[in-house]
Image 1 (cartoon, helix red, strand yellow):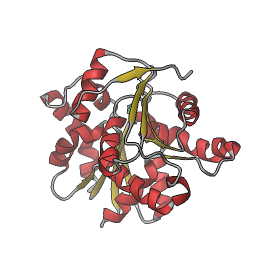
Image 2 (cartoon, rainbow, N blue to C red):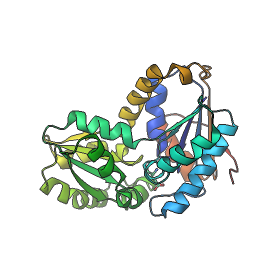
Image 3 (spheres, rainbow, N blue to C red):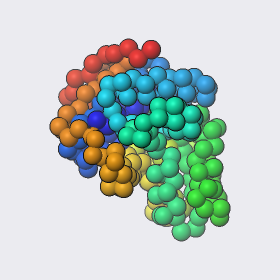
Image 4 (cartoon, protein in one colour):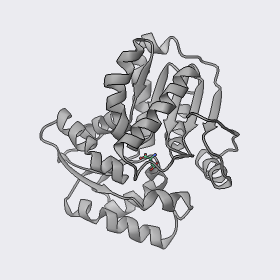
Length: 269
Ligand code: DGL
C-alpha cells in the first residue's frame, strides 16, 4: 500500500492527481486534522506529529509513504530519512516528500534561474526549498514568501472572495518585483487557487501545479524502484483516515475530490 500523509485535507489535492495517474494501487490517506494546521508550528512539533503518522502508516502495512504536506516535508523529512529509516533497517520501505520533486521540476522549467517559492511560515522559515534548489544548481536565485493567511481562507471557502484576491496580490508583489519566471506552490492548499496565482503572476511566469508534479514524479520513482513497486498492493482500494472529523472537513474534502467519501476517525498518538 501507498500511504499519503498530510496535516489535514490539503494533501487530497495531491492524492487526487496520484490516484488519477496511478489508479491500480491501494492507498491509505491520512490527515492529521486533530493537530493541523502545521504551518505555524515549531520544527520539533512538526517532527513529532509526522513521526507518529509515519509509524502508524508503516504499522498499517504501507511500504511507501508520501509526505504530501510541504510543512512536514520541510521540517521532518530529512530527519526521518537520516535517522528514522536507518533504524527500521528495511530496504523494502521508504518515505518520500514533496520538496525534491518540486525543485527538480522548477529547475527544468526556469530559463532565467529566478525561482519563487510560496508556502506556510514554517516551510519558508525552514529555508529547505532554497537549500534544495542551490544543491541542484548553484546559479539559482530563490525568492520566497510565506503566505500564512491562505490556508485558513481556503479552508473557509473564501477562494472566490475579493479579500482573498487582494491578500494574494499583496503576498505576490515582492516575487513579481524580483522578476521570477517560475513559481513553486509549496503548500498543499495552493493548487486550489492556481488560476488566481496565474492571473496575478502574469503570462511570463510559470506557476507549478504541485499536485500534478508530485503525481508525475511518483510515477517516475516507481518505474525506477522495482524493489519497492513489486511489493505494493494493487487492489484499487483507498482508506481515508483522519485524526479528527468535522462537518467542514467533510464538505471541503468533497469539494476537492468531487465525490463523497467516508472518512474514519482514528487515534495515532
Ligand atoms: N499541509 C500544509 C502544507 O502543505 C498546509 C496546512 C497546514 O499548515 O497544516 O504546508
